Length: 173
Image 1 (cartoon, rainbow, N blue to C red):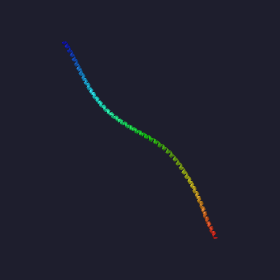
Image 2 (tube, rainbow, N blue to C red):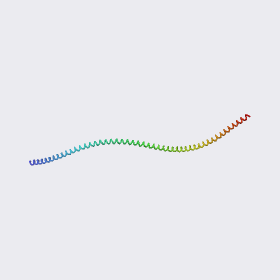
Image 3 (cartoon, helix red, strand yellow):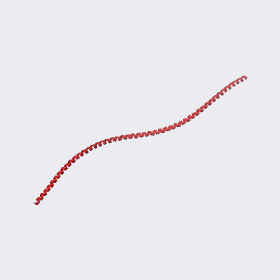
Image 4 (cartoon, helix red, strand yellow):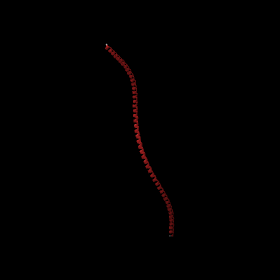
């Protein structure tokens, strides 16, 4: 029995050694687990920091997105205004083309008026020359008629004198 007890005792010692080894291993595992836990805590803290930074980045991205939306809205407004300006410029171009066409018509009409004025000037010059010629002719004729009338008047006056002389003479007889 003693042998059995020694055997049991030896087995118990062996088991005790095994348990001690197991305890040491558990202690080592426990230390390692604590190290892993500490490392996980540090990773968790770092992840929280990363998460906070990501939150800040997200907020900044939202701000950037809002600003980009504002810029996009403003660009759309500018684009609309440019389209309006472009439309107005097209209208101005059309009006300018119309004005150019009308100006061309006016130039043509002005050319016709200038031609008409030249013809009228020539006609006036010709008429003036003709009128001067007629006037000289009429003046010459008037001078002839005046001379004729003077001669006739002188003759009539001479005849009156002669008739008075003859009347005076015949009345005294």
